[in-house]
Image (cartoon, rainbow, N blue to C red):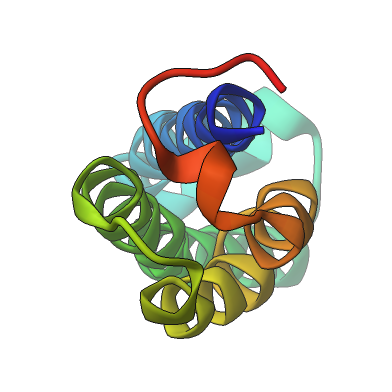
Length: 122
C-alpha cells in the first residue's frame, strides 16, 4: 500500500508540473505578443485579442496554484518514509486527499501499521 500511495503522489506531482509548464509556455508566448500580432495570428477582432491576452495572463498567474499539490506531495512522501504509526499519518493523508491525490489519500487513510513497516507490497 505504501508503494501505491507513493506512486499516485508522484503521478499527481508530475501532472501538476506539466500543467504549470503548459500554461506558462503558451501564456508567455501570447503575453509577449502585441494586440496586432494576436489579431493577425489568431484572426480575431481587437476586442477579442484584448480578452485573449487578459485571459492568458490570468491562466499564467493561476498556473502557480498548481505548486500546492507539489508541496503537499513532497510532504506526504517524506512523511510516508518517516512515520511508523498510522495515527501520525492521518493529517498528512487528509491533506493529500484534498490537495494532491484522491487515490493516494484514500490509500493512506486505509493503511495499517504493518503496511508502514519496511517496503512490503501488501
